[in-house]
Picture (cartoon, rainbow, N blue to C red):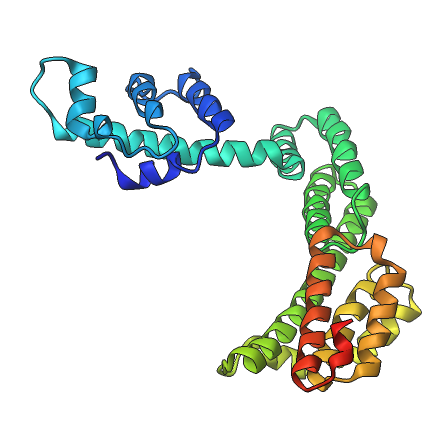
Length: 294
């Protein structure tokens, strides 16, 4: 049989991907030195299981090369090249589906080539995509951080000190919020893993940072300056304390605050928070409090 990794990949294709991959192989831009299309046309007849005897290397070689003596090295090479093309196909397909990543790579190229007019037009379009998404979303926050980094380099290159400083401030601000958010989430997950899976962690940088940061004071001051992500950070810090103390009143408080502004949260964040609520309820049920079935 051909390279098992290649067969594993082909088995994951749906009918549309089967057609798209063939077009990908035929594209002059992506073509390898060897023409892989004839082999692929034979392989795709095995869809979806790709385990037919006709797909054995010797049988495929005979169909491709007629009466020539079987050469295993040729089949290995064809198989390896197609495997690499399949991996490239995955990458290009993913970028095509992810408009934010597509814009990021495009903007970086426009920046490197000093295509300033195109850069500014595309940057505004990229920002609009981000702004149209929910505010409290970790991925969206990371996308903003990367956009800020592009702006940072762009204005530095144009020697516009005021706009460069503003871009750098936003870049640093979003990075800091991301870091705090990830720190709280990580500490919370460590707590749950230790509790539910009886896993113990060696001394680590997450614990050191968490235990030496006054989050109550950080959130207090963030609220005072009306930081855009104060509410987001508060929700996850409250969740951590709910898991730490198992306090029912604290659970009701964070649930009330979250539901009040649920539309500001992205899908992944909502999923994560509801899962944490569910864990708390299950713990209470295990403690004998049957009211939490509701």
